[in-house]
Image 1 (cartoon, rainbow, N blue to C red):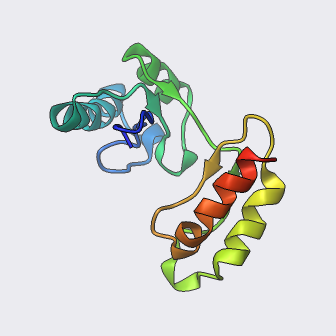
Image 2: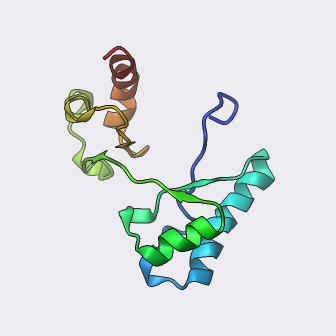
Length: 128
């Protein structure tokens, strides 16, 4: 992804509920992952998607204080349950009606359906 020029965002080191943490722990969660990425690939993160979409003013401020901008999704569906997959066509039909300029899709890598549909989703989104 990095070699292709994609930006890799931060999702924290241990996936905690961020609003329940102190500012210091929030910073630690963000920076530990960013530092790990830098150590392995020479790039740091600047975007953060808080786990489960849970955030508050403290999370936003703490992230901003360490030069991270919080980004959330505009579309998500329950795709992370691997024993409830419904097929690539279902994934495609769930995603496509929700595309719009500026859309941010939350698709989980554990979904075989998403993996099977992603090439078609990307091509059709580009050509839409």
